[in-house]
Length: 166
Image (cartoon, rainbow, N blue to C red; front, side, top):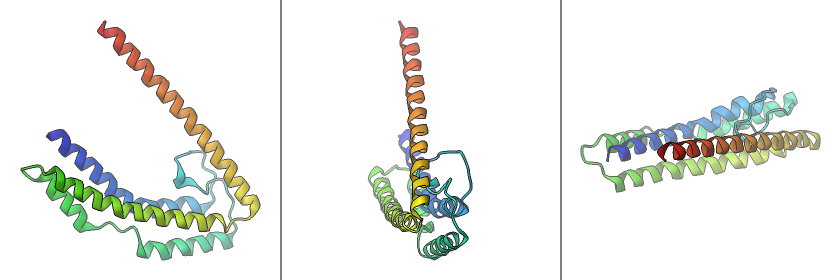
């Protein structure tokens, strides 16, 4: 039962935090045109693409307009989850309902963010799109390599554990 409570707290925390993260990341990563070498997935979609000042301002204005209407943490949702997690009698059905409620808002925010990314992509010149596509492919290759290395390490660890138990 304690494991269920901890899992619920972790999921709820991640979901609540994720509601506010997309705009912060989008405004930092997409608009600056900086040359970071990290690859952390879709949040860095415009890394490596040099934007003109006009493009940067257009995208900044869009993100500010969207930020005012979307992705605000709902305090009452967070409070409701906290009450469920700290309740003397754990109510899994109520927690699932609350997590689903939070997740639906997150899904709506992610769909809106995808629309914005699509719009922003088509504000780029064909050359900028080409750079973006190349950067994306390099990022995916790094992620694949990282996943392969992690899978290999996990398999080696599992084999070591199997050998120790024999």
